[in-house]
Length: 366
Ligand code: SAH
Ligand code: SF4
Image (cartoon, rainbow, N blue to C red; front, top):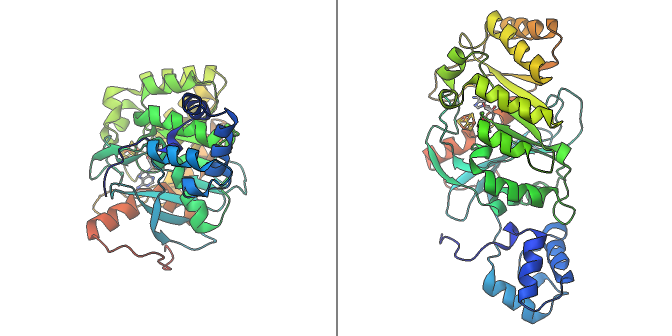
């Protein structure tokens, strides 16, 4: 597949589109007509934009790329978590995961349909337990590739998505510029119009970028992949901690929270690594400092990695200690969430097996 030479029409903000139209001698209202075709009616070509003059449709086609993502494989069924394997324009594979309801995400019940989005092909951060980083980093996703995952999954599933988590493959804050561009399109009334309170960005802890995000005018939710409550434990499983240690990370989180934004800690429980009583006490201390909620996620096995989840009793004891400290914490039980938490695994299996693309694989995720 050839790399795109022209900018993608779906990477532009309304203001940028308006500015382009102005230089082309077109009235400003055309910009809103175009975004309606792209994000409300979801057409797949410039030619389908029937209320634009033909000359303008031709001109847009000369200047911009009109492309859409292709879902090549679907795992799961309508009432469970569904994983969509998505092929990008250069043939790279990423995953987008559709979660039917999200009871544990913020520790509250919700009937929202959540999509878990990828922001990079692979990941450079190499957390020891994660499938996404196993084959290293390949490239950043463009803004339209981030947004188009939502459109492609809605088209394929027939569902309406109203909650977004950036917990798929890649480190969102390492692709901050394209992420912010995509967030605008996802959030603005002229785009997909999903409220900022329904958008959660997850990071392994890039402290400087957390501060930049705090300075954005829109208040997105932030999830921190903590996974270790002391430098000793965290550095053992997350190399990023050697660059931004816990205190540097927590100070950036303080800054985020001071700007009246909510933080959630994600904490995978890995047997014998980060599941001790001492870690639980330390974790509670950090959560209290930031008034953060905690999502405990029993580790999901990854083929080729030696880690495993602690026995149920250990998980519950860890959870109980957090509650003794008065911290709001949830312990995931649903299978669907386990699957969603392990983004990166389907892509890895498929890429490694070099399986021929199958459109719809009815085999439920077991
Ligand atoms: N790079 C970002 C976004 C990815 S989020 C980040 O790390 O936050 C994906 C979440 O799933 C992260 O919290 C990650 O630590 C977690 N995860 C990765 N591998 C997992 C596994 N095998 N089991 C459970 N959770 C896992
Ligand atoms: Fe990258 Fe996040 Fe996986 Fe770490 S947990 S390797 S940062 S995707």
